[in-house]
Length: 172
Image (cartoon, rainbow, N blue to C red; front, side):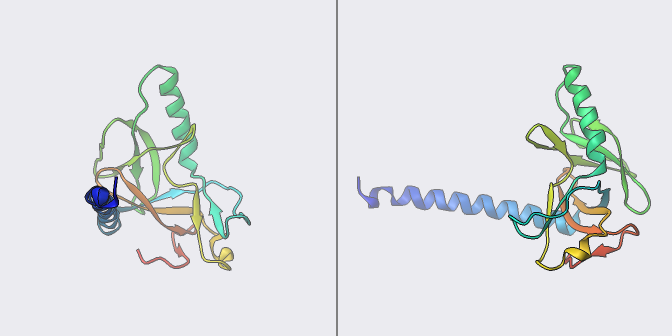
């Protein structure tokens, strides 16, 4: 088998990967542009890792309630819900209302896709990376700012202090 025989298949596979990556990027950019800004309260965790550079380990206060409800669902033999329903106050701060199998948002609610990280469930990532030497700026972080799309996809875009003032540099 010569390389010329496999050349069309390799080019086709490369094009397929490029199209998939482009579609994912477009989806994330749409979420960043059009998504609703909401805030999830942070729970205290160890803020540093010397092995991976400067980052803050994240845990969200709602994750405890989420895990309790997901565990209860599992014990009752039901299917695990894919979305968390969050009540949103006038400032954008959230609280857990319940779980749902599909997006179900009212005017004062938002649906966020539940992430499973190993055996744990979460509404956001477990780390926030920042530029070396700027750790002191993020020590005041009390809220994570998320852009949430209509389909429940959410992206962490910033960290905020107690008064919801953005910390560090954020283009969004």
